[in-house]
Image (cartoon, rainbow, N blue to C red; front, side, top):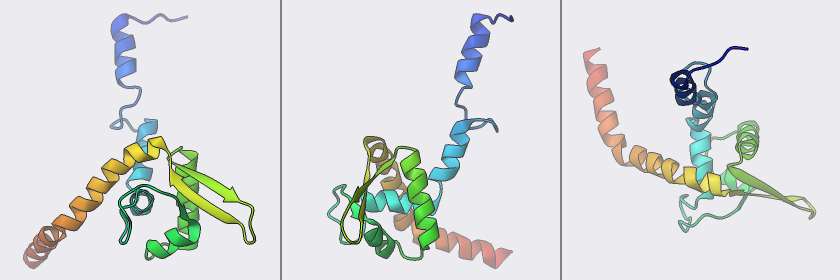
Length: 141
């Protein structure tokens, strides 16, 4: 049985979740969180959507589908399942005819929502500057 020194244990602990390492599980999480549908779903459930009151709440699947333009049924379903698996949202099924399914942010999802809100706000607020830079770059290419 190999023994490790205190310095080796510190290195192992420091690198346990280092997204710069290819094998790090947190890198997979970053891949998921960088998806546009994840950001939009978290913002919608956080109350940031047009017409939203700015307060987190629950939304039905059909409300999310209408709210997030361009998302396919398959992609919305897959994204919601992955967010539920990660513990970022809850899924509540109410036995009505037809069945009602509501989604809401968990405490973990709420903590991430603050970041996604800032990312969305930044993108919306800086799109003119980004577009101007793209146009300038394309003109010189």
